[in-house]
Amino acid sequence: MKTPWALFAEYERSYDGESFLRFTREHAEIPVFAIAFYLSFVFYVPDLLKHRKPFSLKWPFAAWNVFLALFSLCGSIRTIPHLVGVLSARGFDYTVCETPRSWYFNGPVGLWVALFIFSKIPELLDTFFLVLQKKRVIFLGWFHHTTVMLYCWHAFHNCIASGLWFATMNFLVHTVMYTYYFLMVFRQLRPYARAIAPAITAMQIVQMAVGSAVTVRSGVLHYRDPGACAVDPANFKLGLGMYGSYLVLFSMLFWDKYFARSKKPDAGGLASAGKGEEGGGEAGGRGGSVRGADKIPTLCGVALTKDGAGFFQGDAEDSKDNSPANSGSATKTAQNAARRPSRTSSRLREKKGA
Image (cartoon, rainbow, N blue to C red; front, side, top):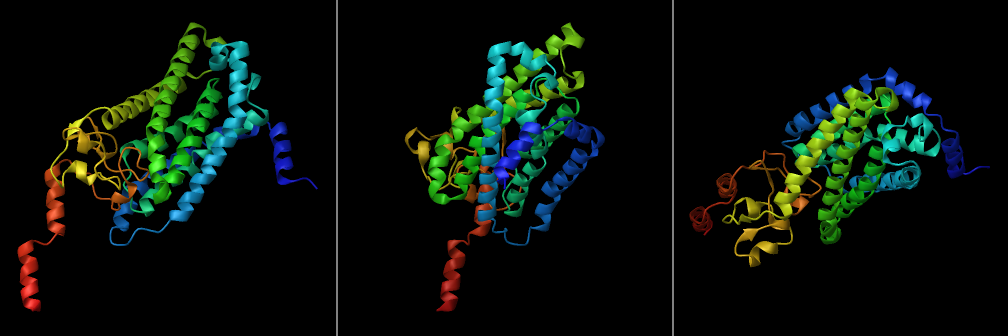
């Protein structure tokens, strides 16, 4: 009797990409409905949860991240050697222009590219976990999920040549990223996870830069000879817009978080609001400047909300509500003052008790 692994390996070898390609072309409504439900959940469910405690999803969230990390690792193992081999044998232009049917559409690599495309739908659960745990969801999070899903479906639908580049890079980055998410679930492992957070964001920036370069090159070759480059004009324009926007957003966040310095506000200000377990961090010994783990990043001068994963914040445990981001220290100070009874009120209560 064959083992499940043997059966899957046999299916990989015999995989024919036409069935999944036909499915995406016949069901273009699926990603649209998925996005509609997803955005409704992100923007309306937090209000429904306003008066209840966060769901306790520590272990399901950990298991989900382990599953995605292993899935991405398997995809990397299948796609990286093939892309590198063809790249070295045929050159870069071949990998961004040659029809997928000639070099990766069928067989094991073709199957994992298809699985990559369809995995963008269950990956939306990343945000569902954050919402149900009453973690804040930053703009970059939901923007990334929605645009990637729509673009991937459109790219597979048009059977574009450069698809293997995008799948391979995504598998590789997600292997490390979901491992990071898993480590962040456990308080004792967070220091180790935070140590690799800058490297992960740097990997993402490189991914966006390479994706932009691949898209530009395929577009240039297509306009030189449309019949010789298997890309769709609308798709590479969408791809350039997507990768270009990611590159700008990730780069701005990375610079603001790890390189740009800002003065440390008074207690109760944004810097103190963003601190996690580390406490003082860099700010204590740098003449009042804040950078790294102690800094709340901004985008175009606007303070960002805290994401549950903690890529751009201190400790994810510090954010357990879905209230809007504070734009200045005065707002945070006022909120803290409202929560904290004054000394005069405390003394009056003590006298009454006596």
